[in-house]
Amino acid sequence: MVVLEWILWQFVIMSIKLVSFVLCPFVQRAVIILREKGVPHDIEYIELDDPPEWFRELSPLGKVPLLLVDEGVLFESSVILDYLDEVIPPRLHPGDPLRRAQHKSWIEFGSGLLMLQHGLAMAENESLFYEKLGELNKNLERLLPPLRQSLFGDKEHFSLVDMAYAPFFMRQSILATRRPEITSSQSAEILDWAHTLLARPSVESSVVPDFSTRYMGFLQDKGSWLAGKTG
Ligand SMILES: N[C@@H](CCC(=O)N[C@@H](CS)C(=O)NCC(=O)O)C(=O)O
Image 1 (tube, rainbow, N blue to C red):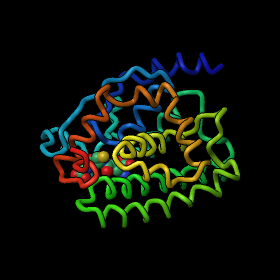
Image 2 (spheres, helix red, strand yellow):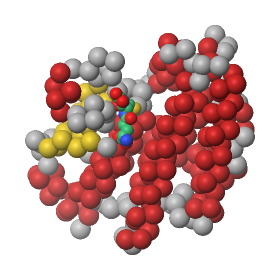
Image 3 (cartoon, rainbow, N blue to C red):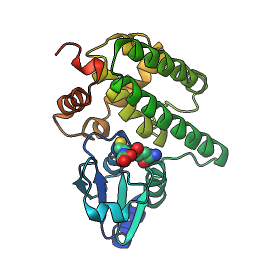
């Protein structure tokens, strides 16, 4: 049944293009679901510092990701995840409405964590860096009750929450190559979840091969204390 639905879907949706900035964690969420579901797609990379005119016209918020589905334009990574999950079997979001809504809530929380992480990575001096690390770690602890209650983080079932958090954990591990306390200060449950997500093929292949170098180079150019620390 799932295979039949998938074949029918191929005839219904003709083309999918993802508009991306190469370092964007929100775009990465969309790449992961496209890979998980085996959906043929094109990716068009743009520079956010100097976006093309067609992007300015299409993107109401001026942000990536955009998902172009035939003539339709989708924006906001969580909406893109929902859409692709709805139209391409198998469904990964929980069937139970309350649980599904809880997953959506935690995806929103994950977006907030990505913004905190960006603030940490961009901190221009040591004291600001440690202030931001404290704030991020305090928020990360909020993940412990739902993880302990198995609301998400099930190793046997990859979920949209997993897809939403994998880009965050990938950046945590890269940043920790410069400041190991970024990950060593995290709880074992969170590290265990991160480890599982980062080993997933769809996650490993969701960024360009030289992603770490590009990410660190971007931070250096922006004057990040962490990225400049060891030269
Ligand atoms: N809430 C949005 C966030 C997307 C976002 O912040 N994208 C960044 C790049 S990672 C962007 O396009 N920034 C351009 C800008 O703010 O001008 C989502 O989940 O898709």
